[in-house]
Length: 178
Image (cartoon, rainbow, N blue to C red; front, side, top):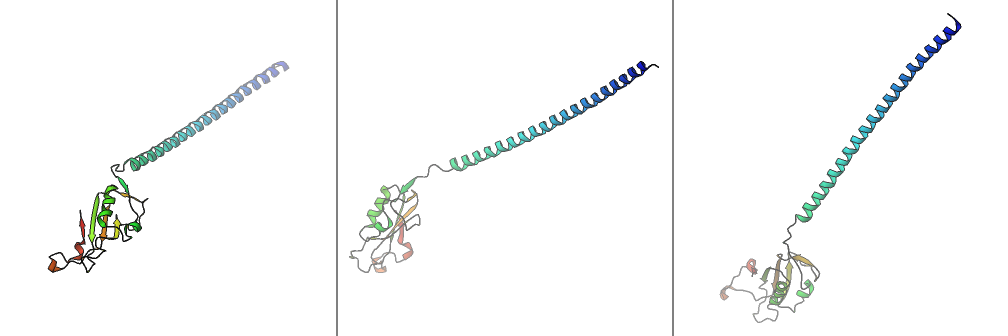
């Protein structure tokens, strides 16, 4: 074989190696590209899962807000105390006047409580308010709001009831609803 033939043969072998190497490089690049695409696909799936989770959490928050906010009974009517506790029990107000004030303010569950604590029927304190309870509260002002169906009890001084008067002696029967 001539020198030229050997060189051609070497070049041919080098060319084959380059082709083989380039195939390997293209396979490597292809594998690398596929791996990157797989990572991107996984990241996209993770992103979608996270988005779904965020959307579900937001929907849950909205649902809870709607249920708690709009699930309330809207028929509840509030009324403001027409008189403060201190003004009601100052010793100058008749129990009927105080009951009328609460009725005009929108309260519907009114009661009165006679204390039967006066010895003399003609005592000046008879009928005067000594205590007021609105929904069980004895501390309230003219700015205090209550449910309009909260029980308002006005306790007042009244003459003692005796058996010879034919009236009830039981002090637990002092609270009467109107």
